[in-house]
Length: 296
Image (cartoon, rainbow, N blue to C red):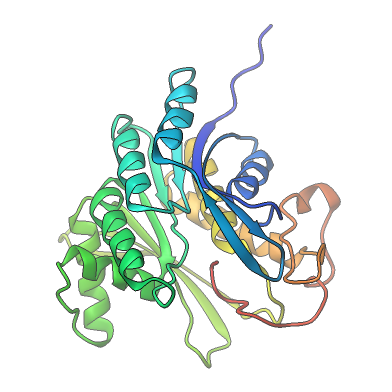
């Protein structure tokens, strides 16, 4: 008797040799939820747990060939898009996922380095905003990054200051066809981190659907965005609705951080299989440092 097929998702992202982020992290997270993750590498990273050294770009045609090859062989229930890498690859991925409108699309791009190459970063940000955001089921980003994407969609039109501007940002994103926006909101001197899921309310206005908060952890982790977004993708592929998937994914993120370990000399690793090893009594180990509350 043949065993039933597990939920399938396809992840586009960078290959991270540490396993803390990128498509390697997505494989671990999906497996933790009983899903199977197909992967398409967009670039190869050279990094460790402390420093990022360089990245080897993978041609857009190779990205297309990787994806088309596996998609012609099986049917996926969700896509996860992380590190895109270039405008050409953003366009290629957008064309691919458009052929599968019934599959959920979770978009969680890493923060773009505007200081290193401002023009290239802005072009990539605009390409993601125009080509991928309108097809997205759940857009996952920090509040400032959501505002950057919304500004791009507005043709550079500035948003109003304060909360009114943030509501206008959400409205602009949701009006494109993006179904939900999940953002991390953390004030600089606050002891709390909030994750907020917004969708479109009955009046067509942004509506807060889920808000979960936690105390800041004193330790520094990396791979949080990939852990959260891959968990959302796996749960949506398994048939959960978005609010329930986001709530469960957030709980998983928390537990994987609390059970985190110091595998290398730098930031802590998430224990993505904490449920195998039992409950952790501590909140990881090692010294604090870096940016513990960044999703990336």
